Image 1 (cartoon, one colour):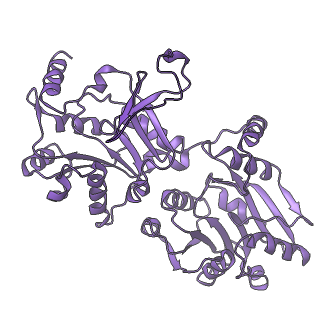
Image 2 (image 1 turned 120 degrees about the horizontal axis):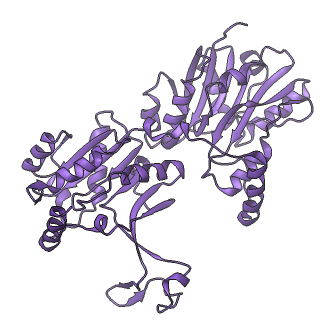
Image 3 (image 1 turned 135 degrees about the vertical axis):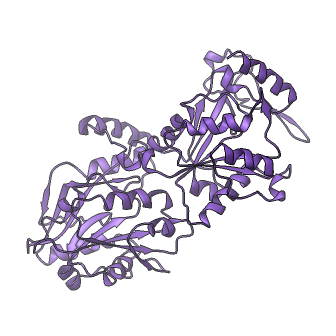
Length: 452
């Protein structure tokens, strides 16, 4: 069959972080005769909204059974060839699809599954599993029934004879593989069809042992993943600058202007928004060429309001306009001396190293006490306060959120900015650390600014 229609079935459940990268790679494939069916299990994040920015067909399911979800997607499709792809898997290159379906015209082949590669920030347990199971040699499985629907293909005719079990809670692919092998078919493992898969295929409770194994496997396999699938240039990145009241002048230039200029130095920021409650500040921001899509409500300017509530409000307002972002950056105007490269370096750290949030921070070697209403405690008290800093195994980092904080939009929306994997970019330059939160600090910053 020449150039058959391929129906790509993608199952999703709260895959906001990955679905755009997944679909971008799918629609970049050299093989173009495709349709994409998203089978979504009532995602509560922005998975569906982001998916609908692409030409997809949506199927919504309530109760999730993996085999039934695939079957439902196929029933809604019309291709002669069927491909299954997980919503958090990203095709490595534009040959993924062509290589995955090239053996389906062989009547002895029931299905093909592809290689799954870890990312550099995949856990050691998961890296071990993926590097061990998915090798570089193509295999024709005659007795081995292993099959994996994270990235797989088969024909509609095969599926009609052997649909996936609809009452299985997991390993529907292994059960299917056992069935077709018992019927005399072959399964092919095709390593030239590869996807990035950020988590593994098994569970283990021995991370130390896994770490040692992974170091060996990485050296043997020449493990060196690229990040083209998540290049910051392809992501939608929003910078939010919250300003309460009138922006402050420093040597005839506003702190807001300096902050906006810092954001404009970024190669990666898509949009800059000022979230202010002040009409004059809004006018200044617009004159400087950035958006002020709303005047923020008075209640968001109360002293007890978290700055991230303001940032989330800004993101929500934009999402109501169907403007969805992958990454959100907080920048406060009280830091007038940001280095030009700092923002982009933090974005790269978030993307390339798999962090949920990256924060600017200042290392503090001196003792830090935490005072509550009834006691005072030394932070990190397991180490001797008088111990030389060079000998301490740990160090205290003071978060400088307003200087720069980079996070995923899903983390912001779900109020888990600091609950996941948090990275710190240490700031050692004294000038960068200078803030202008009050008149005394502003006076010092003005003197420094004049002498730069």
